[in-house]
Amino acid sequence: VQLQASGGGLVQAGGSLRLSCAASGGTLDYIFIAWFRQAPGKEREGISCISGSGGSRYYADSVNGRFTISRDNDKNMVYLQMNSLKPEDTAAYYCAADYPPINYRDYQREEIYDYWGQGTQVTVSS
Image (tube, rainbow, N blue to C red; front, side):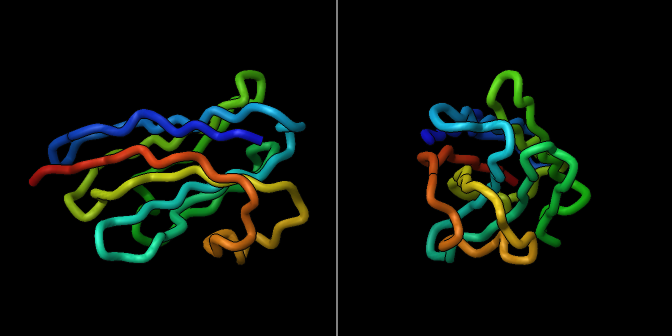
């Protein structure tokens, strides 16, 4: 499975961005996908995940209510709509994937994912 993240950029605080993660290879309809981010000098943080059907979605407290994860399995795409962006959201954002079974309580653990995309940079100015 190959993952390609895109959509990052520079935005003012309060603005919005939509990140995309394009998946290819393998059987993608039920693959579990998560978004992580890593700010300079900080550890990588899992911020959201979505089940293969899209029926289960989880968010870290830091983004809950502002970010929305979704997927379009016909297009093999996963999206992260980011609203009300804050300077502290500045980071490189990565999508990661793996096949079930996955315990949703573990979605923030990097080691459970076999597939990673390259990062896309999001910079939020104050």
